Image (cartoon, rainbow, N blue to C red; front, side, top):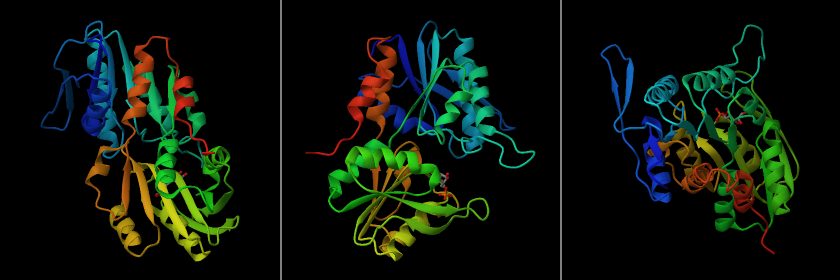
Length: 327
Ligand code: R5P
């Protein structure tokens, strides 16, 4: 990548930005992030961005407001310093779950966050596993959404194969993702009937499909508290599943989720847990049988598509990363 393109990792995604830059044979350009005594953030580019294409890598994960605001301020400073274009590489887009009003007088934060990023001056955004695909429509600038579920599935297949296996959707919202995976691998699919009696509490009432004696692969877009995936593993075990292999793109592990997963792993409630490095903090997790799936290759290839200025496309990149059942 030539010096007309600059990768800048912000606080939440330093490690991922380093990995992306390494894959692109370039360095991470530096920005200084400081805080005033009252908590205000100031982001300063440490080198010229004038007439350059800037790529900010930042997950808007915990602390969500801090990281989002830091991203907005970084975009503002690059815009005011005459960057030619600003692309946000957002490995995890926080606030995405509030994408519609389910009750009166509720906000739609997904739309609000997308508007803020755009108004700050971003020209384009890439998001990994955006909570709902239709939320792409909240952006007026080009929004490329990609999934890490194929990378996760590839790792699982490498470790477990596909014999005697069923793909399980953790809830109705995830059926589309599970169907794509099961279809590509020629595997059957089961669906879990999940309800939320209150926010952050998950109850799984029944399993649609036969899981007894089978290896169950269950991949969600995110683990927040872990309620969904742990409840899913528990019911699959109760129904006689052989191996339960769980995965998620985004590992937030809120409210002591790390300890609960570690406990569940020790009790053999699941065989292995696969989580992508969309959030840098996954490298600090101490969970037995956790495997981290690196998505820097996927993201570096996306940056390459942008750098190629029309010579390559996301469609062709995507076609190459998709999974197929080995003959
Ligand atoms: C729900 O729609 C999502 O896909 C996830 O299943 C959910 O956000 C995970 O949250 P938790 O880990 O707290 O159950």
